[in-house]
Length: 347
Image 1 (cartoon, helix red, strand yellow):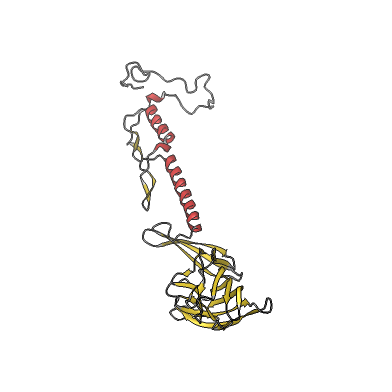
Image 2 (image 1 turned 120 degrees about the vertical axis):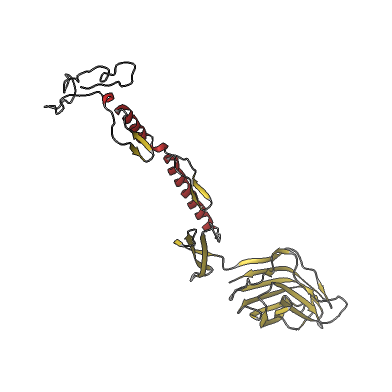
């Protein structure tokens, strides 16, 4: 066997002096083949790489002159440390999903965490009917009347787009939302200011809620119920008119009523009205009754029924009022005020 200096301070057993290899299968060697195909065995340190460089990606595993133990160490290190390989930065939109230099284990964890957070935000946002989740994602909700009274059938469509505004996918969420058929808009909590002849005045006192419908908020079919009650004192030669007005437009009215004598007597006004159409000349139909108890004949009721088709402007804000006026000036002898007033939406 030829020899040459192997670069060690102590004999390495193969170059410093010629050594014959041990028998092909030394005594006590496990799994010894029979017959042994090798005429002799060698120490790993005696084997030298003499081919071109052995490279994995950018990692050199073996180069000309390297000994086998060193090559094996490099190969073992490469495969054992795959999780430590640093990856490049990954960005989604303006969010960094994987920071530059992350290991493979860290990269996988970052991807899972990112998508779990996005799914949670998506679920929360859809529930709040938000108009947009991300810069490249759109959310739109469409609702139509349901066969079930007071309910609508809604579909929220989420459209996912890439940075080039190309549709990636769409997801639909279908659900039913219901509101009570009747719900309150306003409730009076104090007596109104008395209306005294001959000056007209409002019969609505302080309360909670609102009597204003913002511009464009009416819908065809919107229906309301007005109920009002209070006390009246009047003579039998007096005349009374009560008007339900939206802004300056009367949508319901008793007309001029010839009164009979009443002293601090109860009265009741009930009116229903419905929006028939929308716009600057929207139609409103209303019907109602006004009644009161007269002094003569015990608890006799007097009053009037009425119905009206009128026009309002639904493109502007509308404010409801109820106005009373006595027709004759009797020096303040005739007085009317309300103790109760509620406005409810019935459809």
